[in-house]
Length: 142
Image 1 (cartoon, helix red, strand yellow):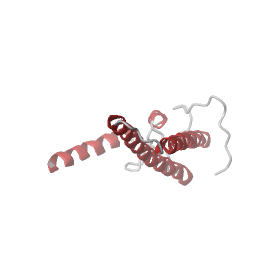
Image 2: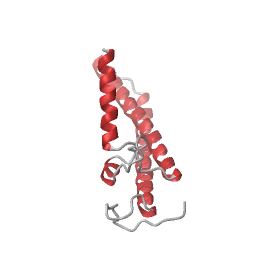
Image 3: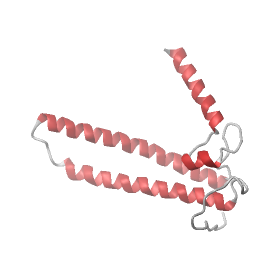
Image 4: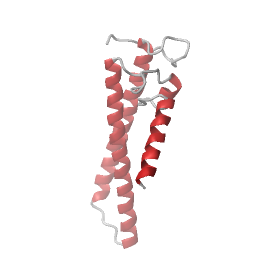
């Protein structure tokens, strides 16, 4: 992909060609910044957990509370690990020229949706169909 410069204060618009090089670069940078922020946050958490790891709370209630906090933090880190995977997949779609298009219908996902959820792979309609189908299948199993 050729080097493209995103103008300062650029925001994608419905008035410009969909997924043009500047728009793609905008979303690529947005995804990379998001990934960097998550990794920085994870690094801070890791250091905090390591610093607290050696301290045992003398009171059983305090210890239980501390263990609960660690468990919650680890669950949040796991969600972020999965999010990083989705960010990497979105970056790969940019490289492949598939970013911004629904993987189910091939239709444009839309700028507003991608601004809100840059890792989106489905249009709103396709996502709603997918969620309805999941609910129906879940209800049938119960």
